Length: 407
Image (cartoon, rainbow, N blue to C red; front, side, top):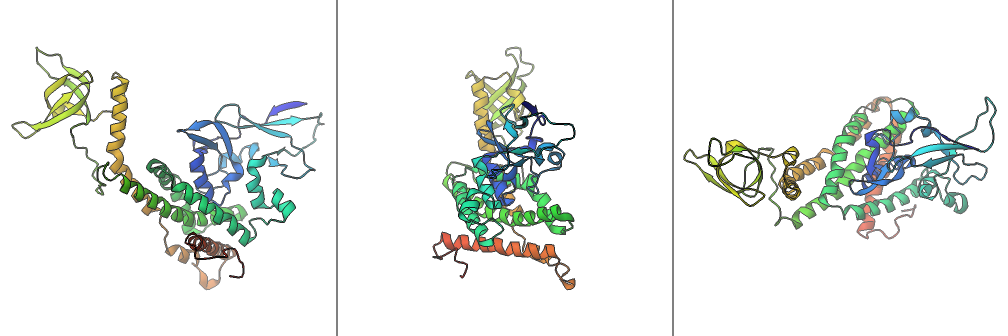
């Protein structure tokens, strides 16, 4: 019996393969749960959240090109088939990675082949049911996602869970989701769903997921926006007002941290100071220029400091400052950056809004008849909109039998 490492790792293969569980759940939803086929949880946290690794592309939800060049992607699983025997195990060589190991029970002859099979255990059961080979499918006759009404039922339950989760998000968690959409997902999805120039079965599958993702990002953005605006209203008295201007110029204010460059100069009575200070007051000199009174970390004051010798500090400027000073600056900086961050998030909501002309793009070339792909996309979008409508009707208790196929 031998245990052989299949490859150095299953995942992550790229830096973008690492995500928080929260962010992965959002990605999984917009791409119709395809990424769940390739996820693994790891022990290491990421930014204080449980971490997930997977090797799916952030614009398609399918395995990216690097993953497709690795053998690990092609390992299947035994599921609930008693005739299949597991011969691949997943282990964690490090707290942030997963690798596959083959175990062979008996010697193999030259040229002999064996199918590599793993066991994804109970956490994969929801995906098995969606694909039609879970216990509920085999024993209770539950249908797979190929059955429209069954898929609708599953998706509606997930939508309620997603909304419940989002309504607990912090403003920073909302920012992370919107930043992920606008920087990693949107451009690729928009480009693919604007041309419809694909070939092959895999390309068609990706395009269909991307069309649905485009609509689901819009649906999520409405809930995220509502939660974000609610948080802004709650904190309105504590935070500076939202500034919609694009001016990012910094204005010096009392309480602000600054870095002082050799002041005072040419004064034999005092040693020139270089380092971190806090503005305690601002006045004007006879030429109407800003002059500061600054407080140092030891409580001493420096008076009549001209604006020309102070700059906005960077992390590097704090290397010789007390840790407490650096910590206070980080808190101040986060507070000062909030208006710009909020504006960026609000613009992000607008970026991923649904474009009604998308349907006309699908219908392009109708004069020569719809292609099979166009027909499939239109049918899928019809079900997607039906899901959204049923969600609203159920949420507002306007429909007593939401899963009655005869309604």
